[in-house]
Length: 177
Image (cartoon, rainbow, N blue to C red):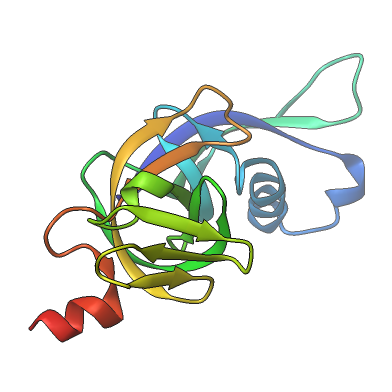
């Protein structure tokens, strides 16, 4: 799910940025420090939307930087259980399919790729034994989030399934209608 959050923080502006417009300098600093940062409470910061309020700057004796209290708005994405997405299979491994959901990549374990007993071939294809359906890199799919782990904030893990009605390879779903 996508969210907007208004946050408050202190930002330091180094002397090499003093010649820039203050709001522009703060925006650049926020962009470099917060974009693509992940937090369990707000998710993955996609972009800085705006700098909303800049307080009076202050200087610490041991630093040449100026410190400003600021309020700013960020756009975030937080993967949530039961969200359903269309995505693209980026790779197939012997344990499942990695699927790009646009903002983040998730994994559908081999057993969660289709309603069939499946096998993995060394050519990078998952195939259903009874249906003959296949899944390979580049296929468009619809998947549902069934697990999310923020244990390692630099590598958020998203577990997916395609085994429920309305989920799976889009080409196959279109054939069912």
